[in-house]
Amino acid sequence: MRILVQRVTSASVAVDGKVVGEIQPQHQGLLALVGVTHDDDVTKAQRLAEKLWQLRILDDEKSAADVDAPILVISQFTLYANTAKGRRPTWNAAAPGAVAEPLVTAFADALRALGARVETGVFGADMAVALVNDGPVTVQIEL
Image 1 (cartoon, rainbow, N blue to C red):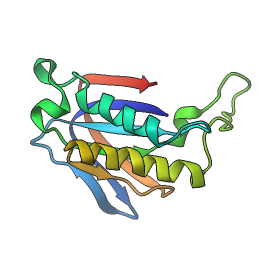
Image 2 (cartoon, rainbow, N blue to C red; image 1 turned 135 degrees about the vertical axis):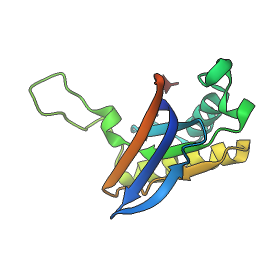
Image 3 (cartoon, rainbow, N blue to C red; image 1 turned 90 degrees about the horizontal axis):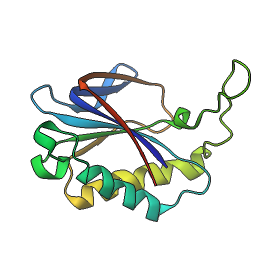
């Protein structure tokens, strides 16, 4: 699994023009774009959730756990794009939906089990993501 995390002051995800998940503008939070590859499993999803929950990238070197910051989780298979050859990315390293969807759900559920306030996008949907990146701070995490 690969997580691209952005520290945000607000973020939302909409499907068909309807907001399905958001971080309100008055809160600092995290937007987590989650990519899944073929050998990922629930254990890795849980470990990455713990790492994200404790990651000290908020103001004053605080973590989401320290300040109860909300987290918006959005599936993002394009994090596994291979752009080594040509001008068209390949997606061979991204897990198919049947593998990826339950692991993205497991990641969000693991965050909730840790005490996080989690919002999500809709797996496989055409999503419109809006955000205000704070800092800007963008970090990639993997195990």
